[in-house]
Amino acid sequence: MRQDIFQAIADPTRRAILSLIAMQALTPNTMAEKFDMSRQAVSKHIKVLNECGLIRPEQSGREIYYHFNAKKMQEFDNWLAQLRQSWETQFNQLDKVSATIKNKKNEQ
Image 1 (cartoon, one colour):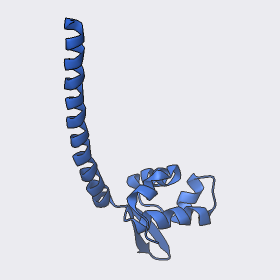
Image 2 (tube, one colour):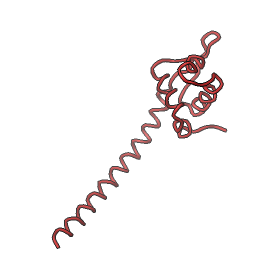
Image 3 (cartoon, helix red, strand yellow):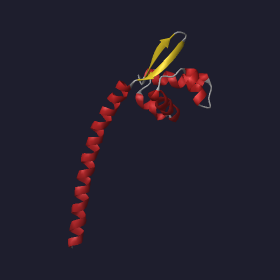
Image 4 (cartoon, helix red, strand yellow):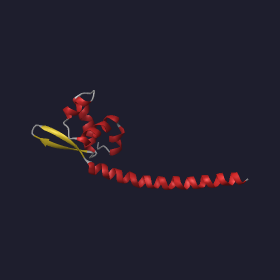
């Protein structure tokens, strides 16, 4: 089953992994050292992040380094920005309606 970005970022451990590898590429063993969990548990988190495209593996000799995929995160951020703009417009309209109602009550 392919994971989506929402499932990936819903987990605090995966968000922490993303924060770590945003600074520098890391191997699964290095990531496991940063958390109180096994290498296998970290691998499961890596699998989810990789399936949704937030990280990308790069083979270097016998090691696999995982890199943060900023392009994928930028796509997600652009989508959120569109939603944010819509929400702000709706909240501004709600504020205007609320102010109008408040003004009418004060006039009475």
